Amino acid sequence: MMDRPRIGVIIPAYNEEATVGEVVEAARDSRLIDDVVVVDDGSSDDTGQVAAAAGARVVAEGHRGKGQSLLAGARATDADILVLLDADLIGLRSDHVARLIRTVADGDAAMALGLFDRGPRLNWLFLRVLPRLTGERALRRDLLLSLDPVDARGYRIEAALNSYVAQRGGKVRAFVLDGMFHRTKEEKENIPLVGFARKVGMLSVAMWEYFAYRLRRLD
Ligand SMILES: O=c1ccn([C@@H]2O[C@H](COP(=O)(O)OP(=O)(O)O)[C@@H](O)[C@H]2O)c(=O)[nH]1
Ligand SMILES: O=C(O)[C@@H](COP(=O)(O)O)O[C@H]1O[C@H](CO)[C@@H](O)[C@H](O)[C@H]1O
Image 1 (tube, rainbow, N blue to C red):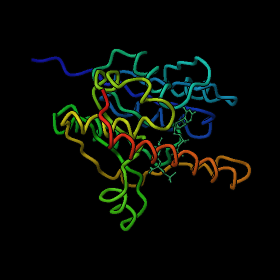
Image 2 (spheres, protein in one colour; image 1 turned 90 degrees about the horizontal axis):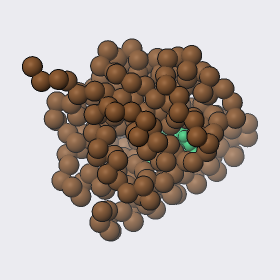
Image 3 (cartoon, rainbow, N blue to C red; image 1 turned 120 degrees about the vertical axis):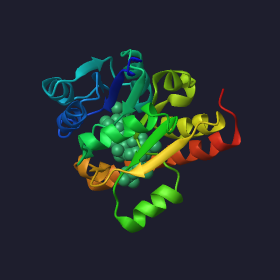
Image 4 (spheres, rainbow, N blue to C red; image 1 turned 180 degrees about the vertical axis):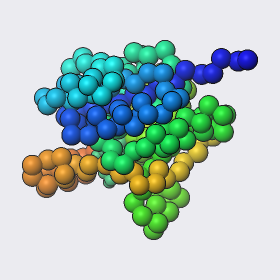
C-alpha cells in the first residue's frame, strides 16, 4: 500500500493570542494532520505561548512579514502537503481543513483555496469575480518552496502563488469554508480607523502585485 502523504499546517502569527489557540486546535482535530507549525512573527503578546499550549510547534525568529513567515514554516517541516492558515480565523473547523487537504491529496487540484463565508451574495463575488487572495490554502510543500522568495515577501505571497500555479498549468479549486471568517484589522486595533488603514495598505500591496504578476512570468 502506498504511504499516505505527510500533512503539515503552517500558521503565520503576529500578535494573534486571541485566536491562534482555536486555529491550532481546529487543525489538530483533523486526524489527517502530522505536524502543526505556528511561526511567531515577532509578536509582542503571548501568541507563541498560546500556540504551544494548544499543541503547536512554535518557530520564532523575529519579525519578517507574512510571506517570509510562511516560507520559514514550510522549511521547518518535512510534510509533503501544506495547509496554510491565518492565525486570526473564527469558526474554522476540522472538516474545513480536511477538505483543503483532500482536494490536493486526491489530485483534484494543485492548490485548494478556502474562502471566508461572507454570505451568499458576497461569497459569489469573492469566488467568481474578485481576486482570490485568501490565506487559507493547501498545496504541495515543494511547490510553495519553488516560489522565488522575492515574490513571497509580505502580503504579496497569495497573489504570487495564484499566478505561479496558474502559469504552470496547475488546477486551482476554490470553495467557501462555511461559517468561517476572521478577526478584522479594525477589531484588532485599539483605534478601528488604524485597522482600516492597515487593511487598505495590505490590500493595496496584494492587489498591485496581483495585476503585476499577471503581466509577467514568475520563474
Ligand atoms: O507581518 C505580518 C502580518 C501578518 N501576519 C499573519 O498573517 C495572517 C494574515 O494577516 P492579517 O491578519 O494582517 O491579514 P487579514 O487576515 O486581515 O487579511 C495572520 O495570521 C497574521 O498574524 C504575520 O505573520 N506577519
Ligand atoms: O480575503 C480577502 O480577500 C482579503 C481581505 O479580506 P478582508 O477584507 O480583510 O475581510 O484577505 C486576504 O488578503 C490578504 C492579502 O492577500 C491575505 O494575506 C489574507 O490572509 C487574506 O485574509
